[in-house]
Image (cartoon, rainbow, N blue to C red; front, side):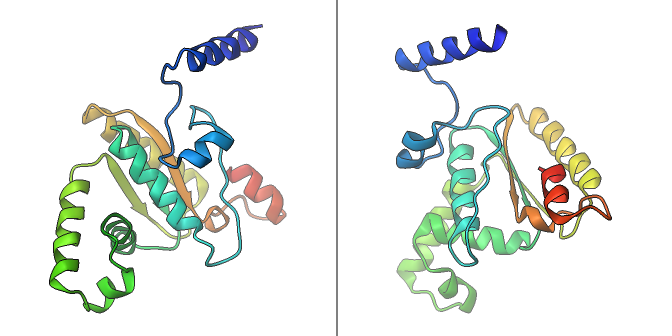
Length: 181
């Protein structure tokens, strides 16, 4: 009964145009799936090189720009690689140009502008490949405390490459991923 009442309240709030949930920053996605809401699990899946990490980063950055805290856990990329991707997306400068140092004065100005826009955003990056799920959980709890100290609610956790999180040994792969989720 409580769930039914809550569902009707949320539907009424949306009908009235009130904010319910956090937009992803991608209006088409919000139209299809609705905004991000507490307790939801979204899985971005696809073949390698399809832009899953980029999509997760873009959503994380937009949520942070709205003032919500974001914990970004990367199981395969370093903090510097993630920052490079974020700078690239924000500035419009190809990441290969950033990596290779083949940027123009215009590119450099765009990168500095992007850095200025992103500085101070409530994003915490944890780059830790192959963490057991228990250790990962404790690290995210610590990030939640850090966010609270800054007066920010940690509203989104992005785990890039869920399959690399170590589950319980001896479980079939599907069960380990389900347990990790």
